[in-house]
Length: 450
Image 1 (tube, one colour):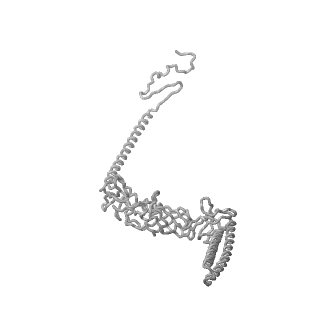
Image 2 (image 1 turned 180 degrees about the vertical axis):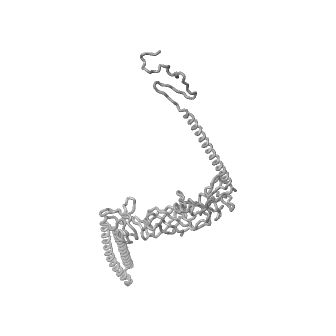
Image 3 (image 1 turned 120 degrees about the vertical axis):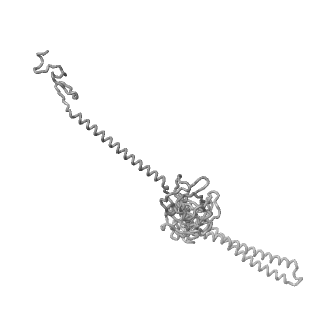
């Protein structure tokens, strides 16, 4: 029913009901809100359907393309795998060579002076002055220090006085002996009956006693002379001299110091000196390698960081010919010239010995196969098939190994053999190299037996 309060023109028709005689299409929906009218384009729904259909087609094509690519890739991998399985496995091969002449054996060593002396005082006294200090090169007989020896000087003066007294006593005994001799001869030659036989015997006894006293006086002179010579010789040690040409390495005295004669543990030494030209090098060779250095004359090369030329050559001069029971090593001495004093005693050096060849075969350690009960190598024959051979190790040089049996020079050996390779299997030689290229450089640096 119309109301007077409603604004004019207001549609009083029931909200949401279509006007009389109006019809909507079945596929169109409309929602009426107060004051808003919504209209949907009939072509929008068809466009959406076409876009969805197109997207589905694109996804299907992409899926089929990916599946096709994956299928062909898997087939290619399968074919490659079958080809790889059928092909011989590739291996690295080394050619065995005879052990090089003069194979190097590098061991640590220590330099030592040719002579080394601790100089003590031969007489007691005070240091008056010293004339040589550490680092000084001195000549044999050169005065190193001078001592004041008041007690020795007094003893020498007393000995000389006693010598003079003994010499005067000899003069007196000489006169006495001559007088006794004259008396004895006169009484001896007297006519019979002038003097008695007893008097002749007494004069003879006096003469013999005088001669004996003369001998005793001469003996005392000789004794006193020996004492004087002893003190005079000791007095010569007041000047401490160098026993040989060398270098002062230590000085333990200063002016005014009291020094005591002797070389006991309670005695302070004056100097320490050494001769370093030529120089000794001590090397302790392990028992396993001692047999190769049992003779002298083996060439050696001494290497040290303090050598300007890098190395000094020498030869084995002495061999102990005995094994140290504690260290299980044998002492070897190498003599080297050291005129320029490039080396000093007490230095740590590396000594490279050039050993005589023994007809062995040298291969890299990577070619060895350690199996229970035997050491083997994998040898590639002329038809590229693998053969496992037992070998005997004669020497271990670090990265290189010397073999006494099982391998001949020229044999091709597989490096780092895989556990999948079996005897009789055909292999493909990937590379071939010489032993020197495989490990000589580390052996030269580290040394044998190190």
